[in-house]
Image (cartoon, rainbow, N blue to C red):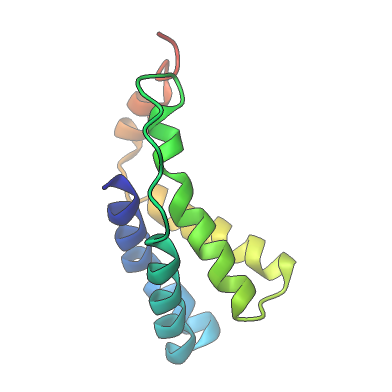
Length: 108
């Protein structure tokens, strides 16, 4: 569930950037393919652990990587795109909330 929400929100936040940098057709193909890759087998439940919430965030990043590779994007450019998508997604969260989530979250 978190995977789909993160994926959708990241696409929403990244649409302008991807469209301006690579064109409208690229964005639509990226969205189509990455959504298809996202719906590969589900992430297994690893129970309650220090890593369970982070573990849920992996599939969208894997879907973006597989999509960009299939579109023939170079490795350095893939890194740049995923980094920017991550940045645009994270910065949508107000700084006080980001700090709240980041401090001591993995210490139990």
